[in-house]
Length: 257
Image 1 (cartoon, rainbow, N blue to C red):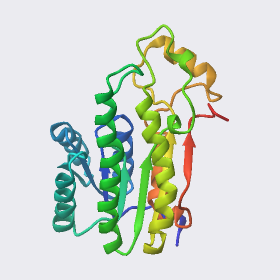
Image 2 (cartoon, rainbow, N blue to C red; image 1 turned 120 degrees about the vertical axis):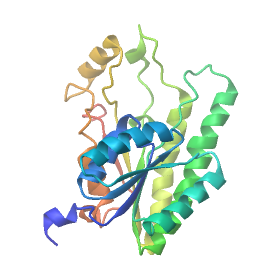
Image 3 (cartoon, rainbow, N blue to C red; image 1 turned 60 degrees about the horizontal axis):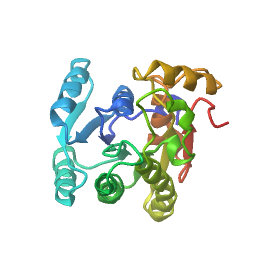
């Protein structure tokens, strides 16, 4: 196969959850630009549709659907719709994340809500979508984790700001990396590859003090930009990584080198 063709996503049906989010939008765009038919699903259907309309204006094959990841019935409804409307699924980008917990001292109910969506719901949607991928003869699942699932937070970065690093996010992103390895073993015989990307911070107009301190600690001298995750996710989604599964790629500009 020609190398350029290995990276192509033409004729592939792809689902990304949370495609209107910060990294989600970058990933959504990358998959479309490589020729995929891409569906974004989230609870914020209006926001997703606005982005879909922007991409459609560029001639890209983008679609928006609703899903509440905390509700099994909503997930199975999305699953049935993808099969009936798009004929099945080849690639799933497991990206959606809720952030109900803002600080370590937040009420325990915030932790419970986070686990319902980001742990139980995340596993539920992966398991259901892997069934669709199996029916198509195999494909790829890419989990979007975080460097915070691999390392403890550097709280000095947040000093002098209103920012913090809540514990639930570290907990479920660490679990996602472990689940990636489990699913790679479980789904490998079904010709489904499962990998994870653990990005560092994406620049999105954060507090100037935070940005200055963060950039000084990163060997590449900056936070990630909108294009940095594109090549990594296309690589793992496409045939270019056909012999890679169970891996977690740290994408943090060398912060933890």
